[in-house]
Image 1 (cartoon, rainbow, N blue to C red):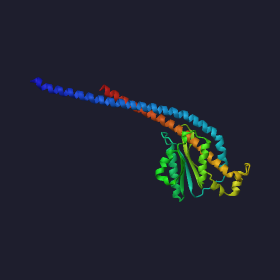
Image 2: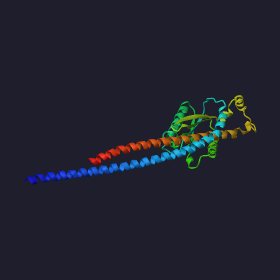
Image 3: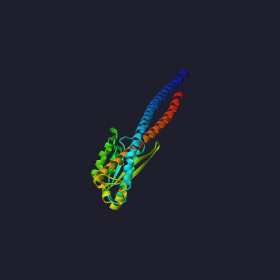
Image 4: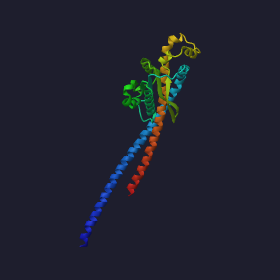
Length: 285
C-alpha cells in the first residue's frame, strides 16, 4: 500500500529534476553563445583600433607635410578686411564616408544645421555643399532643397591636392556670396574642435574697398599684376582651404575612431566578465 503511494511522488520528483537540468542546459548554451559573441566583438574592435592607430600616423604625417603649403595662402587672404555682411551664405561641411568614429561627423552636421537655421532666421538664403556621405545623410532629410553639390566616396583613393582642386573648381563655379567651411580641427590624439571658418569669396573680394585691398596686398610682389592672376589665385586659395581642412578632418576621424574602438573593447570585456560570472553560477547550480 505504501509503495503504491510513494511511486507517483518519486516519479514526479524525477521528472522535475530532468526538466530543471534541461532548463539549465538551455540557459548554459545561450550564455555560451553570448560569450562567444562578445569575444568576437572584442577581437574586431581591438583590430579596428590597431588599424586606426596605423592610419592615424600616416594621416598625421600627411597633414604636417601639407601645412607649410596651406598656411601661407590662408595667412595671405587673412590680411584682407573681413566685414560681416548680410546675404546668401554657403556652408561647406567636411565629413567622412565611414562611421564608428565617435561624434566627428555628427558635430559637423549639427554645426551646419544650426548655422543654416540661424542664417535663415535672419532672412538670408542658406545653401549647403560638402564632402562625405555621413554629412549628406544627416542633412538630406531636413535640408535636401538647400544642397548645391556633394562629394562622396573620396576616401576610395588617396586624397591629394588634385582632388582638392576639383572641389575648388566646383566652389568657384557656384560663386558663393559668403562661404563658411565647417570642419574638425585636430588638437591631439584625444581632442579636436569643430570650427566654422569664414572664407573670403570672389564676390567679397570684388566688393571690397580698393584702398584696404591694396594696403593688404602691397606687401607682396606679384608677377604679372595681382589683378591679372587674382581669379587663379583665388581658386588656389579655395583648394588650399579644402585640402588643409580635409587632412585635419581625416586625422581627427582616425583619432576619434581609435578612442571609440578602445571604449568598445573595454565595454565588450566588461560584458564578457559579467556573462562569464552568470555562466559559472548556472553551471555550479
